[in-house]
Image (cartoon, rainbow over all chains, first blue to last red; front, side, top):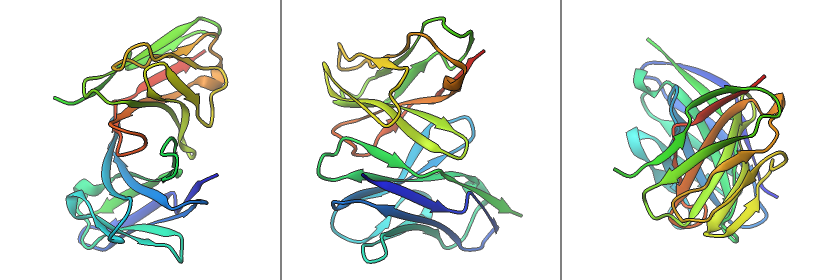
Length: 114
Length: 112
Protein backbone atom coordinates (compact mmCIF):
# COMPACT_ATOMS: atom_id res chain seq x y z
CA UNK A 1 0.00 0.00 0.00
CA UNK A 2 1.14 3.52 -0.69
CA UNK A 3 0.73 6.61 1.43
CA UNK A 4 1.58 10.30 1.44
CA UNK A 5 2.37 12.63 4.33
CA UNK A 6 2.35 16.38 3.87
CA UNK A 7 3.98 18.14 6.79
CA UNK A 8 2.15 21.31 7.73
CA UNK A 9 -1.50 21.76 6.87
CA UNK A 10 -0.95 25.54 6.72
CA UNK A 11 2.16 27.39 5.55
CA UNK A 12 2.56 31.17 5.45
CA UNK A 13 5.30 33.00 3.60
CA UNK A 14 5.94 36.61 2.72
CA UNK A 15 5.73 37.73 -0.87
CA UNK A 16 9.16 37.20 -2.45
CA UNK A 17 10.24 34.60 0.08
CA UNK A 18 11.10 30.97 -0.59
CA UNK A 19 8.20 28.52 -0.72
CA UNK A 20 8.88 25.02 0.64
CA UNK A 21 6.06 22.49 0.91
CA UNK A 22 7.03 19.10 2.26
CA UNK A 23 5.90 15.71 1.01
CA UNK A 24 7.03 12.26 2.11
CA UNK A 25 5.70 9.08 0.60
CA UNK A 26 5.80 5.36 1.06
CA UNK A 27 5.57 2.92 -1.78
CA UNK A 28 6.63 -0.69 -2.24
CA UNK A 29 7.51 -0.11 -5.90
CA UNK A 30 9.11 2.79 -7.76
CA UNK A 31 6.60 5.57 -7.42
CA UNK A 32 5.03 8.07 -9.73
CA UNK A 33 4.85 11.40 -7.86
CA UNK A 34 2.71 14.44 -8.52
CA UNK A 35 2.00 17.88 -7.15
CA UNK A 36 -1.40 19.42 -7.81
CA UNK A 37 -2.70 22.89 -6.95
CA UNK A 38 -6.29 23.80 -6.12
CA UNK A 39 -7.52 27.37 -6.28
CA UNK A 40 -10.76 28.26 -4.47
CA UNK A 41 -13.88 26.72 -6.00
CA UNK A 42 -11.90 24.95 -8.69
CA UNK A 43 -10.70 21.47 -9.48
CA UNK A 44 -7.10 20.36 -9.20
CA UNK A 45 -4.47 21.37 -11.73
CA UNK A 46 -1.23 19.52 -12.30
CA UNK A 47 1.88 21.48 -11.25
CA UNK A 48 4.50 18.86 -12.00
CA UNK A 49 5.15 15.14 -12.07
CA UNK A 50 7.96 12.65 -11.63
CA UNK A 51 7.79 9.27 -13.33
CA UNK A 52 11.33 8.29 -14.30
CA UNK A 53 14.58 9.98 -15.25
CA UNK A 54 15.80 13.31 -13.93
CA UNK A 55 15.06 13.67 -10.23
CA UNK A 56 14.71 17.46 -10.34
CA UNK A 57 11.43 18.24 -11.98
CA UNK A 58 10.34 21.66 -13.15
CA UNK A 59 6.69 22.57 -13.33
CA UNK A 60 4.47 25.47 -14.16
CA UNK A 61 4.49 28.89 -12.48
CA UNK A 62 8.14 28.57 -11.40
CA UNK A 63 7.66 25.56 -9.12
CA UNK A 64 10.01 22.62 -8.96
CA UNK A 65 10.39 19.45 -6.91
CA UNK A 66 13.17 16.98 -6.29
CA UNK A 67 12.67 13.26 -5.95
CA UNK A 68 14.96 11.92 -3.22
CA UNK A 69 14.66 8.17 -3.04
CA UNK A 70 16.87 7.82 0.04
CA UNK A 71 14.65 10.24 1.95
CA UNK A 72 11.37 9.11 0.31
CA UNK A 73 10.63 12.77 -0.25
CA UNK A 74 9.28 14.96 -3.03
CA UNK A 75 9.29 18.49 -1.63
CA UNK A 76 7.90 21.37 -3.67
CA UNK A 77 9.81 24.66 -3.87
CA UNK A 78 9.60 28.05 -5.49
CA UNK A 79 12.35 30.64 -5.03
CA UNK A 80 10.09 33.67 -4.75
CA UNK A 81 6.45 33.57 -3.68
CA UNK A 82 3.83 35.61 -5.46
CA UNK A 83 0.43 36.58 -4.14
CA UNK A 84 -1.17 34.47 -6.88
CA UNK A 85 0.48 31.33 -5.42
CA UNK A 86 -1.98 31.33 -2.52
CA UNK A 87 -3.87 28.06 -2.88
CA UNK A 88 -4.05 24.52 -1.54
CA UNK A 89 -1.35 22.12 -2.69
CA UNK A 90 -1.63 18.35 -2.83
CA UNK A 91 1.12 15.79 -3.18
CA UNK A 92 0.11 12.44 -4.68
CA UNK A 93 1.79 9.09 -5.22
CA UNK A 94 0.93 6.41 -7.72
CA UNK A 95 2.04 2.84 -8.13
CA UNK A 96 4.16 2.68 -11.27
CA UNK A 97 3.55 -1.05 -11.47
CA UNK A 98 -0.22 -1.09 -11.76
CA UNK A 99 -0.82 2.59 -12.58
CA UNK A 100 -4.35 2.18 -11.29
CA UNK A 101 -4.65 4.24 -8.13
CA UNK A 102 -3.46 7.62 -7.01
CA UNK A 103 -3.13 8.36 -3.29
CA UNK A 104 -3.28 12.01 -2.20
CA UNK A 105 -1.86 13.72 0.83
CA UNK A 106 -4.10 15.77 3.09
CA UNK A 107 -3.04 19.04 1.49
CA UNK A 108 -1.15 22.18 2.50
CA UNK A 109 -2.84 25.57 2.43
CA UNK A 110 -0.33 28.20 1.33
CA UNK A 111 -0.89 31.80 2.41
CA UNK A 112 1.24 34.56 0.88
CA UNK A 113 1.55 37.67 3.02
CA UNK A 114 2.11 41.10 1.46
CA UNK B 1 -11.56 22.84 -25.30
CA UNK B 2 -10.43 19.77 -23.34
CA UNK B 3 -12.55 19.39 -20.27
CA UNK B 4 -14.18 17.19 -17.68
CA UNK B 5 -17.75 18.25 -16.98
CA UNK B 6 -19.61 17.38 -13.82
CA UNK B 7 -23.28 17.96 -13.08
CA UNK B 8 -24.75 19.19 -10.90
CA UNK B 9 -22.23 21.56 -9.34
CA UNK B 10 -24.27 21.86 -6.15
CA UNK B 11 -26.98 19.64 -4.69
CA UNK B 12 -28.82 19.61 -1.39
CA UNK B 13 -30.96 16.53 -0.84
CA UNK B 14 -32.33 14.28 1.86
CA UNK B 15 -31.27 10.93 3.27
CA UNK B 16 -32.32 7.96 1.18
CA UNK B 17 -33.23 9.79 -2.02
CA UNK B 18 -31.25 8.25 -4.88
CA UNK B 19 -29.05 10.63 -6.83
CA UNK B 20 -26.65 10.53 -9.73
CA UNK B 21 -23.72 12.83 -10.41
CA UNK B 22 -22.75 12.81 -14.06
CA UNK B 23 -19.23 13.10 -15.41
CA UNK B 24 -18.29 13.48 -19.04
CA UNK B 25 -14.92 14.01 -20.73
CA UNK B 26 -14.21 15.05 -24.30
CA UNK B 27 -10.60 13.89 -24.55
CA UNK B 28 -11.18 10.23 -25.45
CA UNK B 29 -9.43 9.24 -22.23
CA UNK B 30 -9.45 5.61 -21.17
CA UNK B 31 -9.04 6.18 -17.44
CA UNK B 32 -11.64 7.89 -15.27
CA UNK B 33 -11.93 8.21 -11.53
CA UNK B 34 -14.08 9.62 -8.75
CA UNK B 35 -12.73 11.23 -5.58
CA UNK B 36 -14.26 12.82 -2.53
CA UNK B 37 -12.54 15.70 -0.76
CA UNK B 38 -13.03 16.27 2.95
CA UNK B 39 -11.23 18.83 5.16
CA UNK B 40 -7.98 17.46 6.55
CA UNK B 41 -8.25 14.24 4.57
CA UNK B 42 -7.25 15.36 1.09
CA UNK B 43 -8.79 13.48 -1.82
CA UNK B 44 -9.79 9.88 -1.42
CA UNK B 45 -10.53 7.67 -4.39
CA UNK B 46 -14.01 6.14 -4.56
CA UNK B 47 -13.98 4.18 -7.82
CA UNK B 48 -11.94 4.14 -10.98
CA UNK B 49 -12.29 2.76 -14.47
CA UNK B 50 -9.49 1.66 -16.76
CA UNK B 51 -11.78 1.46 -19.80
CA UNK B 52 -15.35 0.81 -20.92
CA UNK B 53 -17.03 -1.86 -18.77
CA UNK B 54 -13.95 -2.05 -16.50
CA UNK B 55 -14.42 -0.55 -13.04
CA UNK B 56 -12.80 -1.18 -9.69
CA UNK B 57 -13.05 -0.01 -6.11
CA UNK B 58 -10.86 2.72 -4.73
CA UNK B 59 -10.21 3.38 -1.07
CA UNK B 60 -13.73 4.45 -0.01
CA UNK B 61 -16.31 2.70 -2.24
CA UNK B 62 -18.98 1.94 0.39
CA UNK B 63 -22.33 3.51 -0.46
CA UNK B 64 -21.43 4.33 -4.06
CA UNK B 65 -21.91 2.72 -7.44
CA UNK B 66 -20.48 3.56 -10.85
CA UNK B 67 -20.88 2.42 -14.42
CA UNK B 68 -18.84 2.87 -17.59
CA UNK B 69 -21.01 2.04 -20.57
CA UNK B 70 -19.41 4.62 -22.82
CA UNK B 71 -15.87 5.88 -22.90
CA UNK B 72 -16.78 9.51 -22.28
CA UNK B 73 -19.20 9.05 -19.33
CA UNK B 74 -18.62 7.82 -15.79
CA UNK B 75 -21.61 8.56 -13.54
CA UNK B 76 -21.46 8.26 -9.76
CA UNK B 77 -24.59 6.84 -8.16
CA UNK B 78 -25.64 7.15 -4.54
CA UNK B 79 -28.50 4.66 -4.17
CA UNK B 80 -29.40 5.64 -0.61
CA UNK B 81 -27.43 8.73 0.39
CA UNK B 82 -26.58 9.34 4.03
CA UNK B 83 -25.28 12.45 5.81
CA UNK B 84 -21.73 11.04 5.98
CA UNK B 85 -21.63 11.30 2.19
CA UNK B 86 -21.85 15.08 2.41
CA UNK B 87 -18.67 16.11 0.65
CA UNK B 88 -17.03 17.71 -2.37
CA UNK B 89 -16.75 15.26 -5.23
CA UNK B 90 -14.35 15.35 -8.17
CA UNK B 91 -14.29 13.39 -11.38
CA UNK B 92 -11.00 13.04 -13.23
CA UNK B 93 -9.75 11.47 -16.44
CA UNK B 94 -6.45 10.65 -18.07
CA UNK B 95 -5.21 9.09 -21.25
CA UNK B 96 -3.85 6.05 -19.49
CA UNK B 97 -3.80 4.96 -15.88
CA UNK B 98 -2.74 7.48 -13.27
CA UNK B 99 -0.86 9.66 -15.72
CA UNK B 100 -1.66 13.31 -15.10
CA UNK B 101 -5.33 13.60 -14.58
CA UNK B 102 -7.69 16.31 -15.74
CA UNK B 103 -10.16 17.25 -13.03
CA UNK B 104 -13.67 18.55 -13.21
CA UNK B 105 -14.70 21.61 -11.21
CA UNK B 106 -16.33 19.55 -8.48
CA UNK B 107 -19.80 18.77 -7.16
CA UNK B 108 -20.72 19.84 -3.66
CA UNK B 109 -23.26 17.44 -2.17
CA UNK B 110 -25.14 18.08 1.06
CA UNK B 111 -27.18 15.17 2.42
CA UNK B 112 -29.61 16.25 5.15
